[in-house]
Length: 433
Image 1 (cartoon, rainbow, N blue to C red):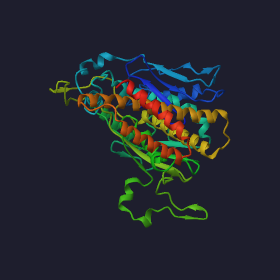
Image 2 (image 1 turned 45 degrees about the vertical axis):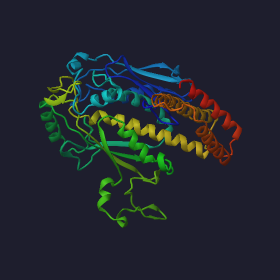
Image 3 (image 1 turned 90 degrees about the horizontal axis):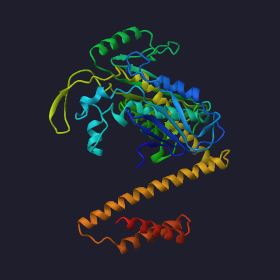
Image 4 (image 1 turned 90 degrees about the vertical axis):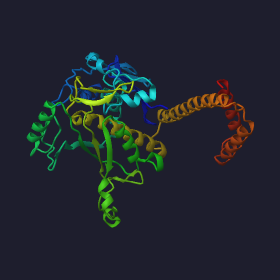
């Protein structure tokens, strides 16, 4: 499973750990001759990096983007683009006392249970520094989004709610309610002094989005947004349009009726049936308090012993200001994927590069499926040997092949081609059994 990759039509693969040499991303299938937006990407990385804003981690990282491949004389070459940011201020000693302890609220316990090993240095792959890759990759899709505007801002931080939004009111927290801003700062200072943390809620509004983006059933636009946002560490919930409030309302109140001028309301948040309506797309997501706090907490060691520990590293009092550029990056990547697919099905101004990009993605999916099939075949082979079950099952193979040939006929694919391919797959599967 490609758990470190995202997107189908504009795909990325990310790598790196918080205290490793670098964080990076590989981007394939980018058209040649595109001006590489280095300055724009660096600006977004600066907005995300620690140590820049009040109430964020004091880790002083430069987060300077380095291009390793795929760009020449400021333009994309059509080859895979590899972007990295080198870690320079990792203080691993801050985490040495945690190498045998599972921190509450972190991924230490679950990573250990899954992989039997985990990188305790700042969370490793589960660290917020992983999001550098997402922000860097999203800079390449800006031109594809054209006039689409993405606005996102906190509407709640801790116990404070933004009642009156003034987008001309600029500050480090991106908090647009000037009426309670000073009180919010005082509140966060007290939280920081106690070594504690708070979360919040972010609202997203996407304007100038065309109708028709997204696909039915498993590729719904809202489902893909949800996966993208919830893939960001610390996010724990999402709602679209009126969200959970819909539970207490009637259908007559929430159906978005229409007349000849268009929709009369937007309770669904600009998505119906998983496809954009052309209205403003609206959703909100909740961010939990930063898990690392300088307060004694109960936990257990790898050996299951109960211990009390206190974090001593550099932590965010509130992660909201730094999560905004990350969420925007994921929104851009989802939209880029949806737009790329829509271009394909509409056959809208496609050229050879577009077609090659689409087929390369399909070939990649086939390869991943074959690898996964091989892995499962090995597991089945071991299971059969342990249970003394005959490895070959000719009747089952024959039954599967007949079903595949029926489907091939239905889909107007050459049956002999399918049979030949199936035999090759079976032969490859049996090599490691």
